[in-house]
Amino acid sequence: MDLSALQHLLSLAAGRRVACVGDLMVDRFVYGEVSRVSPEAPVPVLARSRELMMLGASGNVARNVAALGGEVSLVGVVGSDNEGMEALRLVGEEAGVEGYLVTDTERPTTLKTRFVSGGQQLLRVDLEASRPVGGEVEQRLVRTIRDVAKDAGVILLSDYGKGVITEAVIAACREAAAESGGKVVVDSKARSFARYGDVDLIKPNAAELAHATDMATETDIQIEGALIAALALWDAKAILVTRASKGISLAVRGEEVRHFPTVAREVFDASGAGDTTLAALGLAMATEVSVEDAIAFAQLASGVAVGKIGTATVSPDELVEAAISAHMAPAEAKVATPGRMVEEVARWRTKGLKVGFTNGCFDILHKGHVAYLTQAKAWCDRLIVGLNSDDSVRRLKGDGRPVNDLESRALVLAGLGSVDLVVPFEDDTPLSLIDAAKPDVLIKGADYAESEVVGAAEVRSWGGEVKLAAIVEGYSTTAAIAKMKVGER
Image 1 (cartoon, helix red, strand yellow):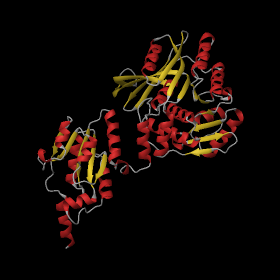
Image 2: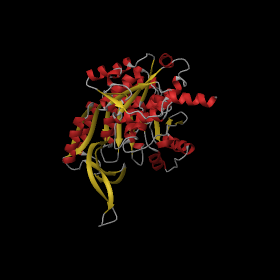
Image 3: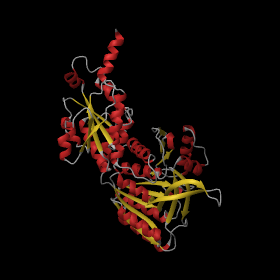
């Protein structure tokens, strides 16, 4: 998905109404370090350092819809226990999520506790009951769905098999969607998907599709066969299967199966990635964009989610950053206009990051430059390098300079791990860039006096600081050029 299409979709998605119905869970993550094995049994000993509690399953879908800009009504069931109170607290803290939770005194709130060390799960402990809800609890669910889902552009059903998604609940969702002209999308762990009826979309993963059809789902041809068989078995209008690194395949009734490859990404934690996919897909469908754009949006969101630890949400800013990076080489993505620099700085500041700024010609990059930029990065979380344009270098250094053109200099700088953004400028000084970025720290070489540093007074005026980095003796662009001329003789 290109940046223009993404930004258009995000603008359409803002404020769209979505109803999330299904099995609600509380996810508890216990983090720590493992440095020894227990003397009592051959198991690792986790030295607990911290805990996180967050909404899982349908709650995580709702969190992701809200994080992407939608407005969510979350309908689910909790027990009359401490975990239920925790779920109510977590729902109340989620901006954009309205909780409509029904209490069932006969069942516990589903709790999944994961023990994590070094980014890896060591163990998961589940507390749950999987029997279907009934009686007054089911009736209250049906009444709630009729009230809150009737104006939703899409209703997302998360059926983890814990008993909330009953025949009556499914019927209520389909009726509410029919009245409002909305869509129903199902994410289910069930053995059979027949009971959902003619919903708009069912979203299994490859393993779930294989389990439901008793067919292999490894290759494209096998997936196509399983999807065709599934459409013959079920009344759904379309089936979308997520296939991890192999992408997504879509079967729409009456059409050929289509495959959508995905960009390979580093996976830190796949927990909740399916919830993120469902949230993004559903929100996009609520905007009525094309199915191609909805799938691309979901792939982009899930790709960002798996790069995080735990059942994480994804923000529009993170999607924009991912879209930019996907269409550029890593170094190219760091070369920015002044306008994009301002946007990046704003995003960094929302995360509490300290912004540094330095500048120069960086004509022939040498050991002294690398040491200088490494020291500069040590004083900040994100380092911006203002880079003189070719004309600017020529005015400052004379004819014959720069040796390397602007594109070459910018890409070499951007390839350094210490540099987060390279911003070319035409002026003789970077003062306009400094004013725009308003860095927390301004860095220049120790061959300057602080009074000589352009922008020093301005940076101090907004509470920033000025740092002078040590110079590595014996290395300079002028000396490098002189050596090259000697070698040419």
